[in-house]
Length: 304
Image 1 (cartoon, rainbow, N blue to C red):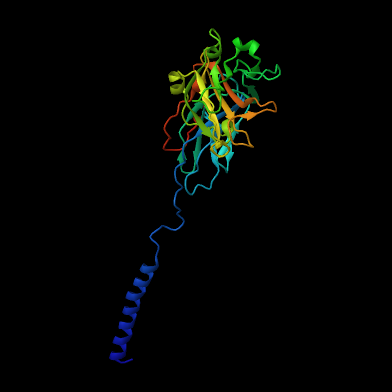
Image 2: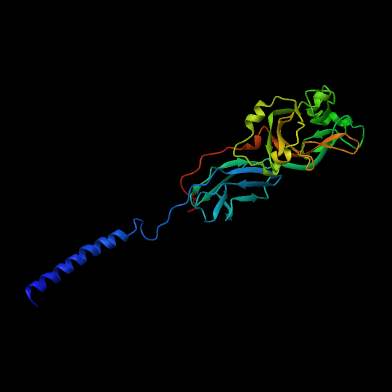
């Protein structure tokens, strides 16, 4: 091989090495092989007292969270789920339980809650209704909510009062503390305005307790509105503090045919249908105590 051919061959090898290295460098990913983007942190854990032995949990999965989420009661493992909700059953009344959810993206806040008595489908008729079979009183506890005839109104927390001639109340009815109907009956308090929730108590998830509402409850009536929008706006849920300091949530269910918060019977008298959640423990507000999310996974200590 002569010298000129040798030089050309050497230059070709050098050029190949240089440009080949640029090509490889330009096609190499900046992400290390086998790594993935970690999922986002979960949203707030929310709960509701479903009945006397069940608490429902719900949370929001973080972005990209496709793994099973792990639910704890205190430090005890309850189970895992590929969803974002779980019912915790076989619980005891008047006992505070603390829950937290561990996900691939971190942990939710922890929250402490109690169960509550649940009674559904109670009908309360306005006091103008003369029928003895149409009760006008509502008793919220202590074991189970029930309707009462007006003759037993001293034991009722609420009475569905008739105000047919009151121009400020188009519906003509108001759910009033029973002592408004008759002095000396139970002095029940309502906290502020109603919360409107589609699905009512069955969808009334919270991440904070009712302590503020109980501390500030001062109203003695909930005036029934007359508009027909509650089929889509949702049930009216009023927060109640009983005379003996129990928390109750009273859901007024819309009439499915009219969208109003009351119905009318065949005789032309109005009534409301309510669901009740009643807390047996006094002054608890369901005992919720939200805490910030933990930055790392839950660590369970083993005995040694």
